[in-house]
Image 1 (spheres, rainbow, N blue to C red):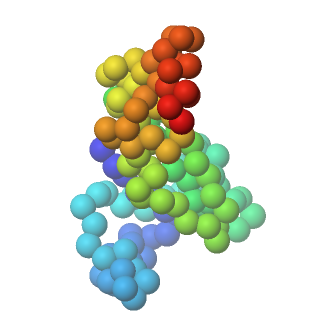
Image 2: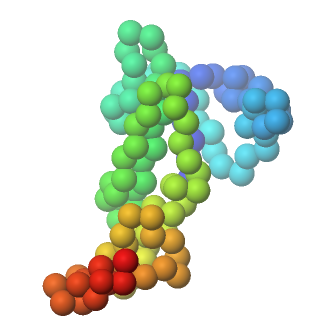
Length: 127
């Protein structure tokens, strides 16, 4: 499940959703967009820039067991990559299912590392 939150009001969110991406908006979205007006969510996740009352660009991947698997917090002028986020989620799912290690840049269908000294050497010898 994906949830988005910002310290802006639901009125701002509506304006973003009603503005096409080609015009700087979000366009149609199929995920909930939470208005964190009290800033409690942003504060709890450590992304609130208190003096300005705005939140840094935070991304948190939490698995189905409630375990935090990935944190990315960017300064305001730097965006995030949806493709990289999807790759990370797929890598976590793969490692959970198969017990293998996904190297940096791994994509579904790519080679993984078996967590064994000899077998990992085989992986690295192909690189």
